[in-house]
Structures are given as structure tokens and as C-alpha cells.
Length: 102
Image (cartoon, rainbow, N blue to C red; front, side, top):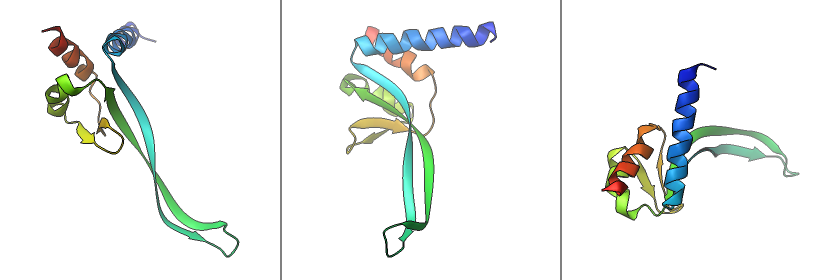
């Protein structure tokens, strides 16, 4: 691995650790969506479609930083009680930490 990749990994891990000490977690997750499911008379799947989408989530004690999270394009999911986005920019963690340091 190149030195730049290794430095980015360490920087990302430091940010993640710092956020976790403040009660905030950022994670990526694949979410499956099922559609057009058809079963035979025995309950066996005959046809259907499964699609997966990568989703990034921010959860935990986020109330004080919700404006920072919104400005990064994350949306609130009331059902799962997480902020989510299809895209992730690794600077969001650093922005949250800077805001909390004020």
C-alpha cells in the first residue's frame, strides 16, 4: 500500500475513535430491497428481484451537531433513528469534531 493510503486509514480511524468517545458512530451498511417476489404453491421462490444499496449512517448523540450533518447531505430516518446518505465524504467526521470543539 502506498504511504498516502495508510495515512488516510490512520486519520479515518483516529476520527472514528474520537467520535465514539463523544457518543457518535459513523458506519457503512448495505441495505437490501426486495421486489416482484413470486412463489410457487409450495412456498419456494420462483422469481423476484433483490437490489442492494450502500448506505452510510451516523447515529448516537447527534442532536448538537444535526446542522453540520444536514449540511453534509445526510437525511434523518425516523424509523431507524439514524442520519443516512448514499454518499460519504470522509471530512464529515472531522467537521463534527471541529464543531464539538467550539
